[in-house]
Length: 269
Picture 1: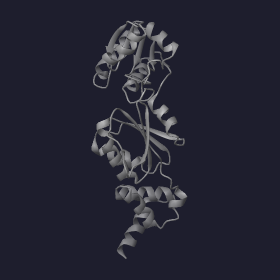
Picture 2: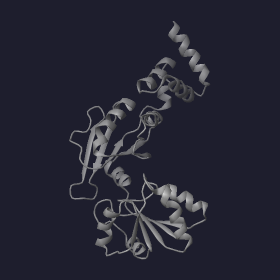
Picture 3: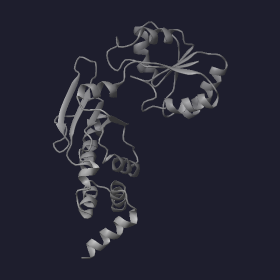
Picture 4: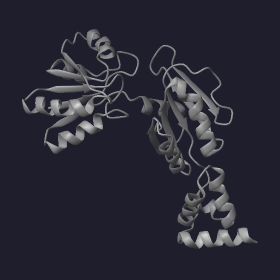
């Protein structure tokens, strides 16, 4: 049996009795970073075999984990902080467990993005994005896809990426209300509110959860615009022209070529 065990995101006391019990009863504990995990495990007097399992070695390690489970071992997987399978390779491991008909479960607990969402006071529903793609083309497409969502968006950001993230989001979405949360559950927990135009008012320090309000214009409001104004709304958000035409067509419930022909005709005048 493999258990995905949630661990504290800051305060070491934020762990369940069941989580501690599960870790103590495990034969092996898979860790994102064994050095980081030792602090928590030592605090609760848990002395088990630790094996690194992270985004750089999961492809190599997954077959070994599967083999240990087939041998009858009890394994727990923990991330550096919070709930596993969120922005880490735990999801890839689950695919292999399912393919091999191996049992797994989760021991629930703290999650950074959920706690940050509660502290922000922003409205549900929300879309959890996590880290933006590192590839520039994939990142641009991700922002295009998110540009017209009416839902609160939740991102993860390293301190050295925060200012660039905010610039990208401002270029893609225009001005929106935003909030950052850092040092969750720790002594210096901080919640900062600002807008994308002004940017984060301090020097970035620490890992961030970044929340951005969704688009407030609804389709009905957009459809009150002329076809050209509707099209230009998306183009001004940074959407490529062809993609903007698709969005207008989707909003209006007509074929893409109808919108294309109308815009071409208007621009010829």
